[in-house]
Length: 262
Image (cartoon, rainbow, N blue to C red; front, side, top):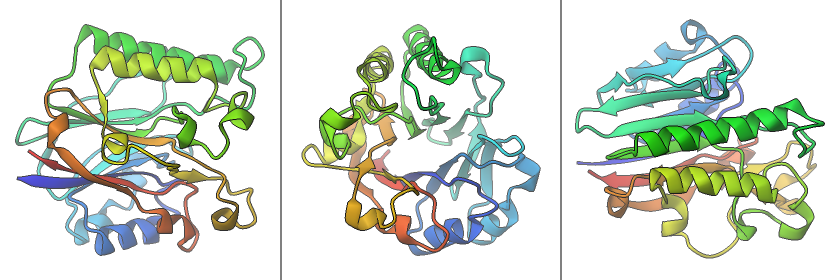
């Protein structure tokens, strides 16, 4: 049975419940993975989402920061979480569908502003987090798995508005891209979005700092959908709902969609 999945850094699920509900109502994905929920699970507006048909939830939360949730029309079981880099943050949760597919929902640390771990502890934490992800997938190679989330790295030259200008900007530095690639290689992951949309500039995030984000269009593709090697051929119909960035009180991220025939 095919299902459509979306991933979205919502930047506070309580504040932006109206646009989450708008997405669920208008787009109707079978599964929505949220990051940066900024709420304990018991304070997330889950009843609102259940009223819209999303009564199955797997989530991890904390007050004011981080937080990840999987909202689903389909039955889904909690498949655990990992505390990579020992940060004590709610940055990962996994759920297992009845067909055996495991969905990993990640919110990788942003890494601060200075791409130097000696001068910026947050950047070091980001690299350590990615290294732990690599080691985990190397030790337990994923099968029948999907990985989504705000990975906070735009790996390709056409995933940013200006490759040369962003080479020293956190999210597109060579060391981050190298770590990103190592995670992919360790798990045998396939980039579903770029398999479907192989050419051209493609973004999922636009800064709040831009007065007119749409006209300036200085974006980055920070949000990703991956599939394990055994099911990558089942993925199709990828898209980024750019218009959601212009909704009322928006997140600075746009949702990324993919459909899987599994």
